[in-house]
Length: 336
Image 1 (cartoon, rainbow, N blue to C red):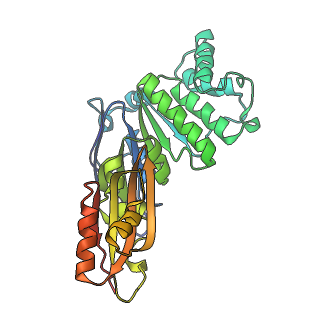
Image 2: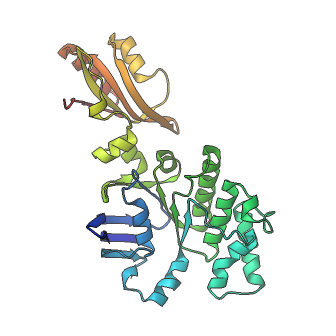
Image 3: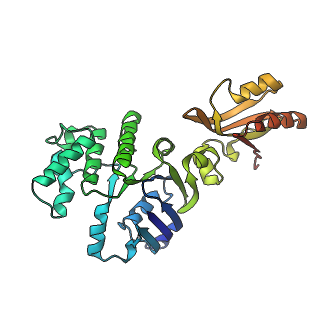
């Protein structure tokens, strides 16, 4: 288990200090695929580097399997990092070494030599689906293949935790999906805890079971992915989950009131809810924006609709929508 307790990180500048992380408290259970998401500058990469103490926290603790990482000596920390490996957006492969040699590299740093090292590297090439690339050099591989080799190298020391810092950001959607499937398979097959740092909502939706949303160096919201994404409570979470629906960009439509309709797992069967409401209740709803997605056979997300500024119409519409327990609504008031 990974526990982050009251963690702060401050960078001292020439003129003033920058507080990158402020009172971070998170718990990641063994076997989780845990997402940490936020806008650029939110503190995501700083946080992941604090977990393995590549960045030393200014204050607070990182506790992994009961061991306070901050208290370890340099030698103990080096040994502990074999259990906490990392992959990056830029792959960070050694270009002058072939794939087999890249995978062997962390084992050689640990003082392990001989045929068992090559045997382990070949086993990992099989796991990542590139058994025929042991003699290939990184420059001859595609981006997706390079990331697979980077994953194999990260697994060489049999880690308990895999940190992924924007590991799919440089990849196309098809390759991203393939890499995420590989990470999911490794998580299930080897029981490795995975922490994924990303700014991509789709990555968290596809693979993570829990998520923390960072905003300006703090945890704005945390919980199970379906719960956070279906009904975000913080402004930071709403900006990520419901892009383009901020109050300040709402259109001004004379004679209409605007409501946010949140789908918390509506069954994706039959006619769309708003269409069915128009048929059943003869209520015209002006759909202003929509950000919904299907996860399995259920719909999650958000829609902004305009209803006639008439109390009877609004009451009938909300009564109809609230008849579905997987739908919640809130009126959106412009801040003019």
